[in-house]
Length: 503
Ligand code: GLU
Image 1: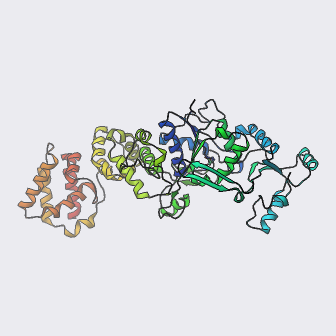
Image 2: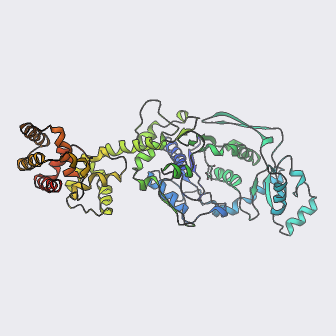
Image 3: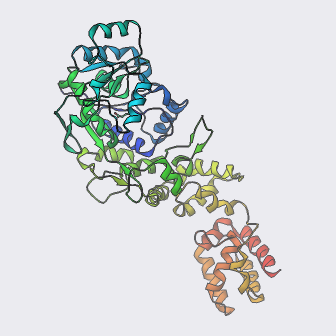
């Protein structure tokens, strides 16, 4: 029988969710959905020192916002729970025992002081093949002594015993054949003094227990792969081993190294999916959501970081991504993150969204800016008129506020230097010609005819008209604005501004 497709996103709840983490979740999700599989969220919270209150809920919120909701998770347990490693604590010790029994792991009794001394003497100290025989562990101490130390509950850890002169290799779905020299890998801790497993033991035990079929994770985990593969073998599970795929790194905009949160702070763009409120420091780190990204655009741009469908197509819905996704189109090379390109995706998504689908978001953004929309139909027209000028959802406020409240300040510098009584005259006359039923092209026609009659170049009065209606030098076609505002409002804005410019 073919193995069921089961994949997992396995974050540690230690803080904000980096966009690379969301991309890992997304690729897991796409692979699962493409193959009628199951997408699992497993919370890897065995490192109690790094645990952060609220981070798990935050991860779930981010996944929900993106629309990549797990089929099994701590909040929606399936048959393989619990889904938090801390709650699985009692299950791991048996594997550490089994490994020790078989000679693949050993007890280490070195105190933190002893380890610090070694590190002080040698900054590159690694606990492993070259050094393990100088340390206090079950390989160097007599059997009786080890039994006594254990009986006295002497603090100890369990370490894997890395074999010498071996090559651990596997076939990565993205990278192909990958091989590691075991001499270069240290004896990682598997079980800590508090009885908690480390990541290495827990990840292998749980991937097996949860019947994970494929592992998609970031390239930063590649150096851990030999340890995991040896554990699968040493525990006698080799035949059940999942397939591995290490996703390319997301790089800084200049391509020099992995994109970090600090790069975002430095260069002025978000790196987290949603606002992260650090409970320890009280600092809030801005996320893509709050900056005004549509979740569809965010997911779309993440998918294109290291993947494409083999054509020039760049805009994909989640459904289309599921349909087109294939692992052999994931690239090995790191993907540079370009915030301008990210905004381009969002702009495309906003532009192609219906006014109705943007209505609620724009309405509440306006309300937050103190503008209460009374006529929802009018709002829909406004959205349609300005949406292709917005790259971020927040842009709707600046781009549309003047439709709801007449400008109180004007870009006078753009108008005043060339203002004169002839222009004032022109505008008063133009205002008197505006009728409620006129279309934008009729208004434009009337405007140009009147300018010609008065010997004024239309270009000279076009910008003043815009400033009168909008307050500044931006916005869609000025006659479209006039039609949307209606004759009464347009006339009143022109008259008011003429008085100001005259004064
Ligand atoms: N807990 C690891 C993380 O924080 C999971 C790595 C893996 O997928 O094996 O990303």
